[in-house]
Length: 156
Image (tube, rainbow, N blue to C red):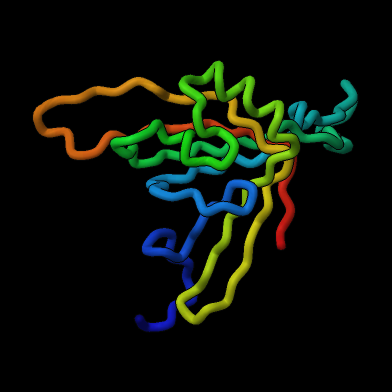
């Protein structure tokens, strides 16, 4: 492969980890980083033609990761994550997470020339599982999406 300056998303250049274990059969990962807990506000007295300043909150909310997996024959996708084997539905997963403690996820980005960087997502919790499906004669794969929320992230 010819060296490139721009990042390539697929083809083995991005890997996601759950508590140190590779998240297998991952098809799509969408990261929505934390946003401010309140909207920025302009401070503009009635006798001023322009704002004097803009104030922002000094806190952010949670971030959200949505991961879509290819479902396998022998188990639901969430059972591939260490600690969640044997859980049968969202309620089981929500209860099981309590015993897992502080979960981290990590995104590892590897360039074609071998340079790596990563981002760690801290205090991760699965908040939703899309167990629905639509199967027809032309269905080739059955993607399933898990929604995770995290408190903060750090670069590594």
